[in-house]
Image (cartoon, rainbow, N blue to C red; front, side):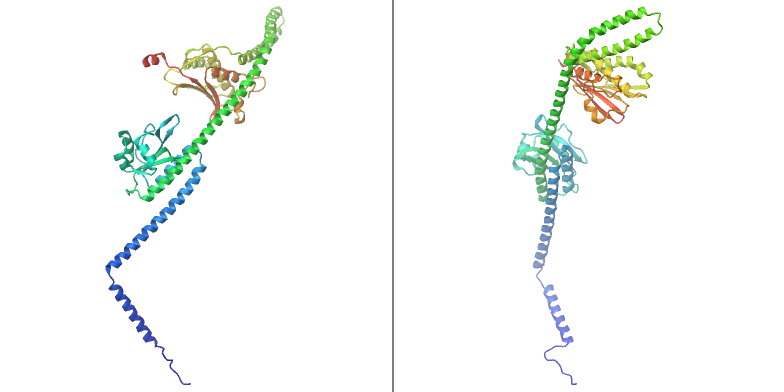
Length: 470
């Protein structure tokens, strides 16, 4: 076969040389390019990189805001809400520390330091911003975060500068709810020393508005919960009052019908005992009858106590002295029962307006209840404190406590946890009535070591305190 060459097709060596020539021309073109064009391209690349970084930051910030908003709306616990908000702001922005200032109940004209997080000095709970100050009005109007340095220079008073000094070159974020300033969040400068960027400002602004709504929701929920508790307490009190009223009507009739025959029986028992001196068993049998009659008389007396609305003669009395006298009386009885007593009494006098005899009845009843709860011995803790305008008396024991499902009923008439024949179920009901008559409250709760009764009574000032104040 004869070989033929294809027409118009360069060989491989020609192709390679042609490619090399194009590469050389391209390299020459780049080498000879204008430096201004290269610089412009590099600047453009830098700008695009910054834009890309900022877009990524915005996406992340928006995602964070959406997730936090969803969580904020689900959280109704006030403290958890504030804690989450501050930690999120510090973590996202990289702030050194922050404090949120909010209104207090009963003091709507001030924003007090409600919670702080971070390292370094922070404002105390007594420090505040006035809600009608120039600073508050400015932040409410602009509704945007503002640098502390600018605020100090333009709108702050000396007192406000004193608070803001804790936050250095930080930023203040208004918390606005329905066009009204509901609080302030103040954050210190960044840990890395960088300035606050527009992205930081926008993130704090959005999150500040979200937390303002969440805080208002939490407050409304807390108000509703408090109102529900008060309504339930009033309902329980009404039921207890109705029970006592019905019991009172019955007890008055029963007491009237029983008291006279009981007195006659007791008198004739005394005569019978004298006439049966020669019968060896008669005195013992008569003593048993007398004990049972006395027990009936005690029940009748307690029934009368629940019904009678006797006026309480109130004097200025020191609860510490009443407790001290009772502990001396009960010392031997408690010791013989294997019960150790630990007293914790406040240093200052615990003065109240009350009846010494009625208070002794209440305290004695609670001490006896504690003794009965510790049949095998234990420890009785008695304390008297005076926090503010109250005197708080507590009796704690190391007994088994009371089942939670019946705690709400222990002050009801005829309700008892003791064995049949060992309790009438009227003791705590009478105690409740006496304490209420002293404008106080009595409650019970189970504690880790046993049970605790707590009485709260309004305190009165000593004569010396009154004279000094005058």
